[in-house]
Length: 440
Image (cartoon, rainbow, N blue to C red; front, side, top):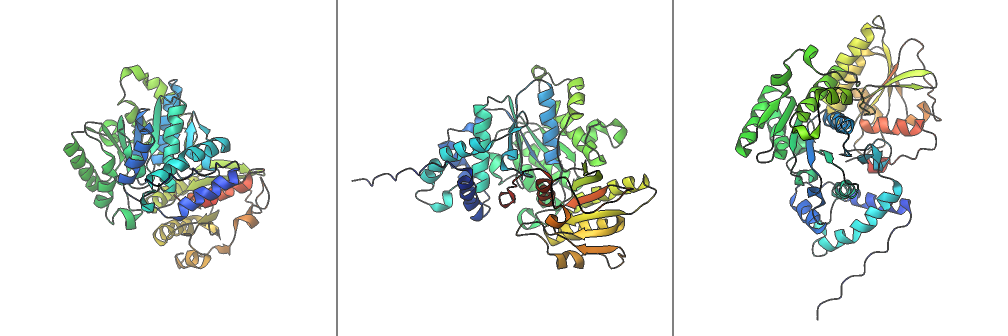
């Protein structure tokens, strides 16, 4: 006699219980590889096939480029699905339709629907149970299908080849940039990282590449040739002069690279999508992407929030701060910063020290965050400004208030995206952040 099927789990009714369940998945660790994801979406009826998709990877700029493409397609009148990670404040930010985030009620409903299927596919082997990221990716596919999205814009979580999102067959694959980051997972050279990210290229589907170094570009073009995919690059299309790049409302030279990447991606779609030059231009001027050189006023004090989470991002931050200070007569700034990992922190603090007269070092509430002592040890010995060991709750004690002030310049908050998310949570009245579900 065959064993009786296990009773389905009792459904969740409270969002706090869902958070605990999802955190239990996250606590099992990150899992790479798409074989398990293939079994998972098959059990779900292949929702990843229901909506045309754009698949975006890159060391930097993939989130901004995704937001730009979302704005372009919505400007053209299409219903958009947007899947990005991590979130800043609320988990539902990861899955948006027409820029409306998943609600807590929807997350409860999807978790109750997905959980028994996850238990079924892993009944013989617990290692086959979907990870936290795979679970959230399935929510995105289901939401896009349920809401009848016209296009799904999907950001890779990490790398590309082995990422859970690589189960999609996109209309266009996009690689925004290549530089050293997550080297322990992706490789320690631009060529190795490019090979991992080029893993999203699908046979016969066009590939758009953004600001990519020559060695990495060669690897991408070789992968595309093997797949029979045509490569389109912003360097070939727009040249090297920013004057020829499309403008966007997001500040910074790097956003012009991203705007060019988004505009070129839009050109890959046939005329029926109505992505005219005018539509693309309007969309690029209506992009909403928090925490990227974002100007915010807190209790009358101007701030600039800018996630700069790896060495390439630190170089861009350096250029932006040079430009900002030139407009302030060279005045040095107050900088609040924190980072995850030595390589990221060293690059970030070298730049921060160049521009700061006062550094407030904070430790994001993440297991990989650098301690105060580590952050101090990464500062250049020549830094002569004031150094403070700080914490977010003390700096931002109540909504819309910071204890720091500078009457003549914006205060800079930079480093980990998780740091910026924690601060945004503190600034919002009644906000309850979901930081423990942020990392990946």
